[in-house]
Structure formats: structure tokens, C-alpha cells
Image 1 (cartoon, rainbow, N blue to C red):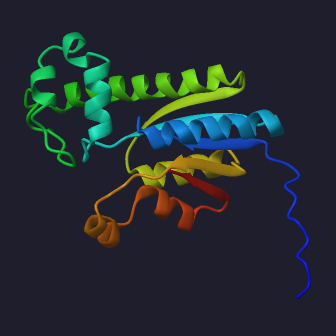
Image 2 (tube, rainbow, N blue to C red; image 1 turned 135 degrees about the horizontal axis):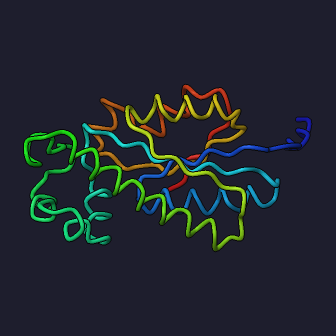
Length: 184
């Protein structure tokens, strides 16, 4: 059997890193930062606000950042919200405070990722908070920014849920035009 030639990556100029506050996302941010340093690439950190899902990561970020103390009326509700069920009608019966709350938490998630990037010494970094379907927004930003690479954390859905729905990272890897790295 003939020995295969090694694959050489000549250039990476733009790396997109979707972040959700999970440990996997922070590991992905660290790896992307290392790659950005090696290839002198621009990093884009993206957090997508999804009104349909209130994950454990968002709950934890809200609790850690004491969002309840800053955004009146929310802290008591955070602990009672089951994962995957966003309290659209629970939060004062209005959509506007909900969006403000999620954007606030999203910015805190990005702050955590920016700290990882800063510790790695990366200076070329953009941050974005977007609203909508995470897969669609990630793919749109990858295309708009001519991303050569998407580096994202894997998120452990339950076996049955993952089998039936697929994860965001799996869908992005399947649909993206560029190379994708999923980090555990």
C-alpha cells in the first residue's frame, strides 16, 4: 500500500466560533485561538439567541452572572424553568424583557469566550449576538465572513433526542461549505 502524502493547510484567514457558554464551547474557543495565532487569522465569536430553548448553559450563565439581581423579576424564574422550554409567557407576559434578558446572557457568554481569546493573546476578534435558529445563523455568518473554518463545541443531547433531532454541531458540520471542527 502506498504511503499517503500529508495534507498541508496553507491558509486560514477567518475562523468562526459559535459559543453557548458550555465547557465544550470554551474548549473550542481555546483551540480556535491557537489556530488563529498560528495562521494569523481573524476570529469571530458568535452567540445565537434562541427564544425557543432555555438550556442548562444559559441557566448557569444567568446564575453565575447574577442576572436576576440585575434584571428584576427573573432570578426566581430561572431555577424553575425546565431545560429546553423557554419561558416566553412566564417572564411578565411580554416578549421584550425576554429578548433583553437573553441578549444580556448572550453578551455574558461572549465575555467568557473573549477572556479565553484574550488569555491566548489574540487581538483580531469580532463578537456578535444574533437572534434566530442557531444552525441557520452560524451558516449565514460563515458564508458572509468567508470563514475557512468553524470550530464549535459538541453539545451532549440525550441519546434519543440526539438521534431524532441531531445536534447543532452535527447539522452545521453536515451543511457548512467550509471545514468544521467539533470539540468535546
